[in-house]
Length: 165
Image 1 (cartoon, rainbow, N blue to C red):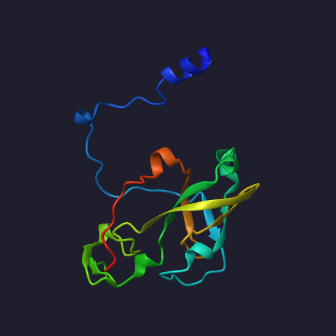
Image 2: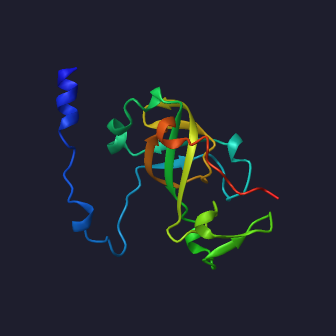
Image 3: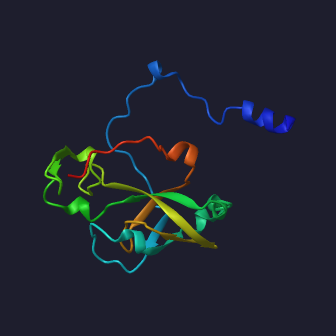
């Protein structure tokens, strides 16, 4: 236990206090760590809860998922690349309820940075392949990050959403 405490006391990285940190302007580069395989060719609004997908990691990231199979759920961050070519980049949408919401208040793919985030059930891990259910990404989608789902951080039972009707 003493060794664990000493490890926890050592910061993983040092950061300047926020008041000394410059804003991060302009674009930045991220690289895919994996891709999705599921046979779904066209984006769709519903039915993802039944879709089983494989998240296939690039070989250089194999060691980075060691232990992931001990979790029941993971969070997948991916690129909504087909939405990048959409002719319209709306600031707001009118949903089926008839209410109008800013794009950041929706789950629409038509976002400024076209990033998708899904919490999904992890069914199995086989080497570099994670088999998941509920990932709302089409076949070939680039995955840029994978995180374990931690209920203490990722679930808020008291969270509220607007009424449907």
